[in-house]
Amino acid sequence: MSKVIVMNHPLIQHKIGIMRMKTTSTKEFRDLVSEVAMLICYEATRELPLADIEIETPLVKTIAKEIAGKKLCIVPILRAGLHMADGILNLIPNAKVGHIGLYRNEETLEPVEYFCKLPIDARDREIFVVDPMLATGGSSSAAITMLKNKGISKIHFLCLIAAPEGVERLKKDHPDVDIFIGALDERLNDKGYILPGLGDAGDRIYGTK
Image (cartoon, rainbow, N blue to C red; front, side, top):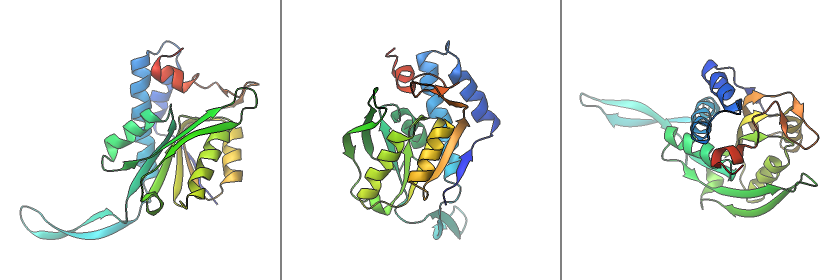
């Protein structure tokens, strides 16, 4: 079964509190998305496998550690996931990046796919799917299904804010995927938005509303 980990780190909670404020500027909101994503990734990568590697320090040869295998791939769900990916790349600059394009039909609330581009060796990597909001869970579940259909099995999901409904949907559809959440909110409203939430993350990142 998957793990659902809600962050309780004071820095994460402090930064999310600022993000929630409607007076927070576009630039500050954008910066905070990257910063919180980096902090969540720190926890999400805690159990990555390590391998021994022989290195030479300025003084002696010794055994150090490195992440085993083909390492990592970050897959943001467009468009709002892009700035989460930027933050994670600050922490793991050598990670490869894929992209999945989905949008939510405002009437049915179901995801519609329009783009998917992944590294050639994605199935050999630890995949971190990132999207700021886990609301109904439809888009996130669809994105993970797309990855599994391409033979990818080592998948983790990271988000800033989640609603209980979205968490339950993702656990039901993908019980093998660990979920890392910055803050777990109360519920969805009748339009499928998270309450108390922080508004539309994409619009706030790009200043489009």
